[in-house]
Amino acid sequence: MATEINGIDDLESRVGSHLGFSEWHNVSQEQVNTFADATGDHQWIHIDVERAKAGPFGGPIAHGYLTLSLAPMLVAEIMTVGGVAMGVNYGANKLRFMSPVPVGSNVRAGAEVVSVDRFEGGAQYALKLTFEIDGTEKPACVAEVIYRVYA
Image 1 (cartoon, rainbow, N blue to C red):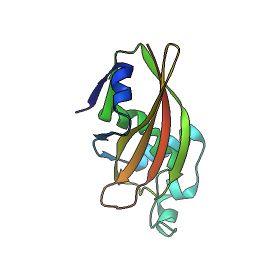
Image 2: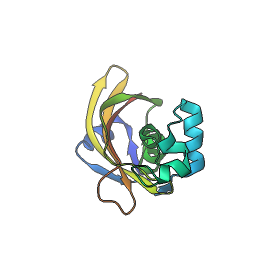
Image 3: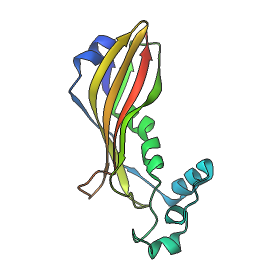
């Protein structure tokens, strides 16, 4: 169940807090192929299953940016921000792809509120997202992402 945040004051009160984890989601070869088509990144380590089996990862892996692109879905499972008119993605301060995500793996994200900075008409907040691979100790990706919400 997603943590419900009621407005900017509530969001500010959660700086430094871990909000929880999303559900686990399977990363399929079909999803990887669709992402490759959408982005034009058809590198063999992602889409050529047979060649990738002989490659450095023992099989195809998800694109790093595919893992990051799961953030909107996974964050929505972790938290909702009510009491605002709308929210938008604003960018990222830090981003590292630390471990490959083998196709067929399950991934989830955890979120921590890093900062909240008010501006006229809303606030900008940063979340530290840690993307985990089921059964693997090292995270797939750690990103400090920035969102803006408008009152």
